[in-house]
Length: 94
Image 1 (tube, rainbow, N blue to C red):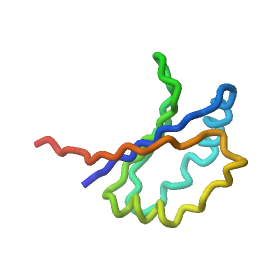
Image 2: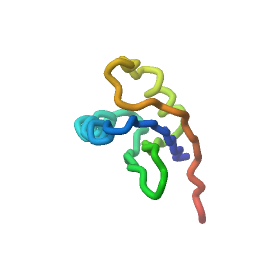
Image 3: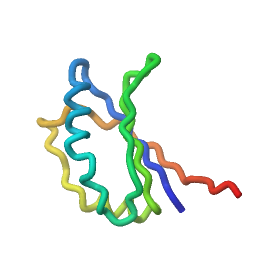
Image 4: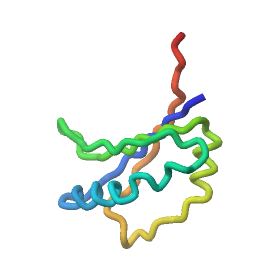
């Protein structure tokens, strides 16, 4: 069953363009990961000030395997702060 993981990112004022540039530079870096189906970076509008990273996975175990092998990021080089993750299963409507 497809699952969706949504990361909420706080981005300090003035760092939005850099965040988008970094995501663009690694746009396809997860494509070959087993179970990965795609992602979107959502830019805030309408009063929201957080970015959201929406990823789709074939199942939760695929996401967990990717997360377990992912190298931790150096906090001194990041331009955002993760502020939680929302997790969903996609409902197949017949």
